[in-house]
Image (cartoon, rainbow, N blue to C red):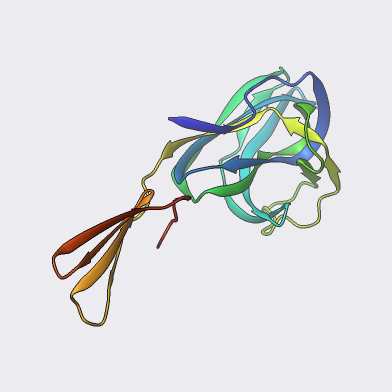
Length: 191
């Protein structure tokens, strides 16, 4: 199991309805859960985790969301499981939560526009839409995922006598029973 996001408990709180924070995934992964350090403002509150794909530094396409979980008014790490898991390519994603009433989202100082807040909406907006606020905050939220290998792609050329396999950071080429190996960086993901 691997993680991306921010695993520290922030020392400051911002109230959000739909708060997401931008983080980078550096490899292919199968997302199993999002964990966030939050404190609901109500005695009990229904909260779900969400993930949006990055669109030029802003939250864009909705990639997935969990069921609602009833969370007590206690600041703690809360786990939100995805079923089924979500397949992700390397890139930037916005991890966060949506709640029916404002939730205290813990954070530390981050970079400009790292945390975005949107208003509550069901069904979930797709795409995210214009955030009501951006903050230079690094929210206490992270994703657990299983790393996935790059897809192997065999491309048959017109002669049928050569092909190219791409796997991880290596290209294997065959031509008339001769195998040529080339290493490349970064690793491409080929569908």
